[in-house]
Image (tube, rainbow, N blue to C red):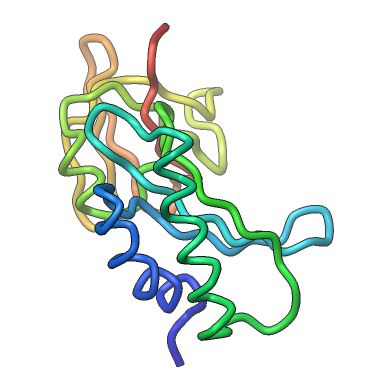
Length: 151
């Protein structure tokens, strides 16, 4: 049986693409005792509220019809954001050379957060250029990798 996120991604992809966007990620998580289904979309030049609405309405109807999730949940459609989380190999490929933040489960050299240029990704392992040094992190060490926008 497919995971909820995979099922929803398959349902969402044609709707998202029809709205001129791309599907970044689908998340199904429990927060403060409630379930949330989040669909993150992306678009060159940025995602507008109208883009979110043009995906949300038809996808909500399709989810009601297909009913892939037992029980109640809150449904949200939003932009992947400037500080988007990188999860899939294609995410890392797209942002190779960009500045990212790596958060670790356990401290390394007294730190759990590293910011640097993304220089490599292979099977979940990430390599960063941090100043003049290269730092590599294994998949098991990494809690989160996200873009690190500077404003």
